[in-house]
Length: 392
Image (cartoon, rainbow, N blue to C red; front, side, top):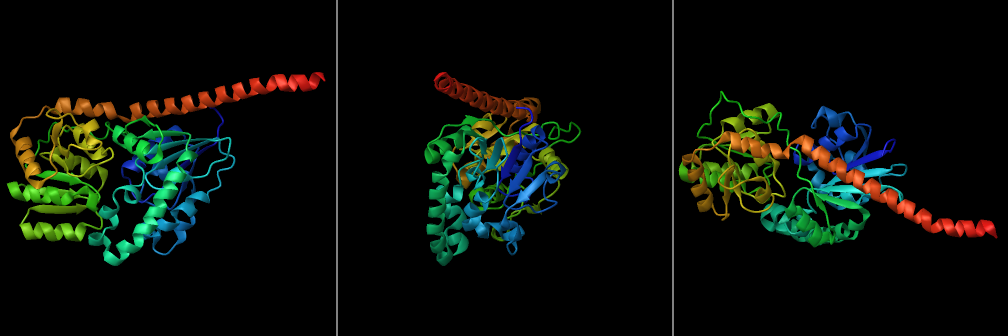
């Protein structure tokens, strides 16, 4: 709809991960939109997002929020509900936490691109806040807090007019926790940027690109590589860094912890890796698709979104067992086999950015059309009554 005012709502901006890449693609469709976010650490996202007109919540100004924003999780409902969205015709939230629960004006349409209902509030509490992660006392204190957050998440699910899921796996979670249907649109992968380099062949080294948090199960990749004597590079940071370094040292594993590096450096590592490993369950998982766009196979757990992005035996290996033994066996197999980088690349191209924009725009147009039809039907029902009153 031309001339409409658009509000984008995103949980937080602290780096260019998968959710931010989705937001960037949507922002390119609506360059005049105003972005609403709980907090924004300047300089951590792309210029396209940095340039957007922006509204931030009070979380931005809480002590040490740039690094410890997850500590303020209990106040996120209040923060997200305080945004004033009066005057906007279209609200688009990209949500894995609280963004989907924003309060819109009555006449506006709200489309939520849902990366996942809150994992830590619903079914992954122990992975984030279990006794082994945050300590027994804090875990006990957080359990009722997260239970209340889950109830709020469920009770505010009706604020969304149309859900868009990033995978069929997440669509199932939306159905289970929100009792709502959704349309699946896989996230965009920049296949123009992530592409093979014919002059650089793969090395024996494996690669993990991941936030270092418990549910990613990076320790499986470390132990499996140590088991077969293969070197491993890990790109990423997180609260698990110290524990994973200790594990690698105890195993005598050849592991390089690279931290967060620039995208062109990640692309080069994709190109040179024997394969990219993803041992955790991902809602979709953009890293395997980026690796495939560079013509490299992946070794991933056969659960979650990986079942939608990896063709077993063609673009990588789907590991049916989450154990170290199974991953070690798969790493040996991927090293012995010959892979068709052209076929791997062709599959990744089906997840390109242009495809995402077309599919997402089509959903917005459909929501607009249904709204117009509803308004026309409502007017048609009222018109005879108005005419009758005028003829009295």
